[in-house]
Amino acid sequence: MVQKSLKLFLLGLLLWLVFINLVGFISPFWAIFILEDGMRSNELLRFFQPFVPLVSIIFAMSLIFLSTVDSRLWIKIACWVASILYVGSSIHGFLPEEKLIYYVLIETSYYLEILMLFLGGIILLRIFNNLTGLDSNIDSSG
Image 1 (cartoon, rainbow, N blue to C red):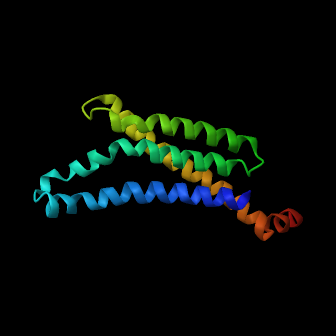
Image 2 (image 1 turned 45 degrees about the horizontal axis):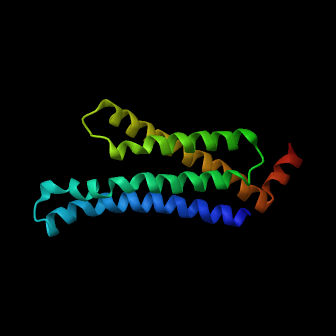
Image 3 (image 1 turned 120 degrees about the horizontal axis):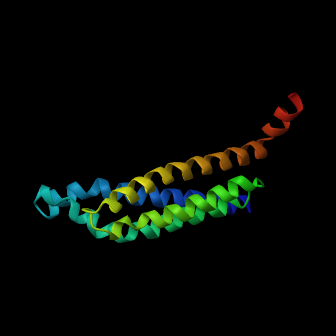
């Protein structure tokens, strides 16, 4: 169960990071070399914008699945709440950029991403401590 959870979390994390950053990295080159107009670099970003919520769902589900291996209730609740809010805020890709709600949702999504990475790190740290036996050494010395 732990190995499946780790694999799914890492897959969700890599999909999220690779997909979002790869599109952002390629878009200026796409505009210059394919479209032959550097000012149109947002076109590729706008094309992939509807897929961002799908990647967000994968990332959120991977965090929820990872939280199932942790016995702490507050971690599970925090992961569920952060994941639901994150998926809900990722709809900013469907909204026009002129609206205030677009900027509110994009900032909320950004902060929730950081929170989710932090929660995933806490869970991974506990898993690795349990696998290496560091928890028993700390508990016996304190």
